[in-house]
Image 1 (cartoon, helix red, strand yellow):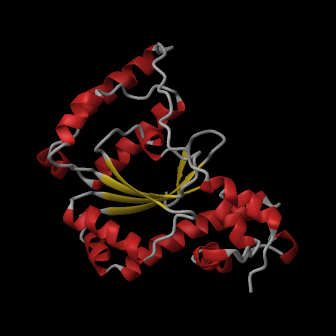
Image 2 (tube, rainbow, N blue to C red):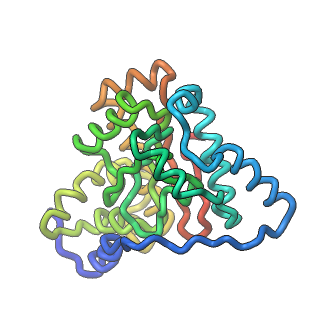
Image 3 (cartoon, rainbow, N blue to C red):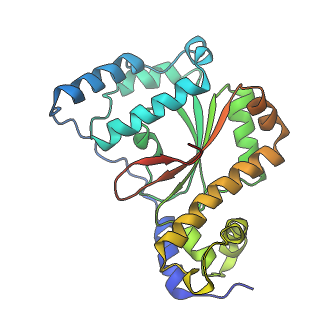
Length: 256
């Protein structure tokens, strides 16, 4: 049974308070030749508008992952690609051809498109506290890949996740109780810690549960969605796990 733990609840509640405002973009001059070259390369990829269906379909899953890695480097260096929003709105008005779907937590410190330096029309994004895959999320992933043609699914957990901490502390409150139940398997998977270290005060333990939650979610996707599992087995898509560091902005790829 879960117990109502107000300390843990206070840790969890802020992740529900996601801002609806768009962060102001920075357009500061680049500081180095390397950054200028990186930005030029990203501009060539982006070309101010979204990918056409033909361009997206020609991508391999490896192409998309490589772009995400480069995009995260640009995010860390604060050299995000300038984008023509008006052109993108016009280009996506009649159709969309996103190259990937990202399953992320709702945490306001995890701006998915910015983390990978992607723009309007580039990604499907599913967000739920604790980044787990229930039936509805699986259906969204099947739409993103089988129907809409996306090449990659990324399940991304993040450092200091309030949902994970609340699950560890057995928080019980309304619908939050059921939601946190989806994280319990990750806690059960995280066995290599003495009982007195299985606490939210132990960052190493919390990080281990966060990463195991990503791995469990990927396993669940493959088990509960034969459609996605078959696409992955055939090499049509790739499913990857990731861990986002809120302190540095860097993404750690968990299956590498």
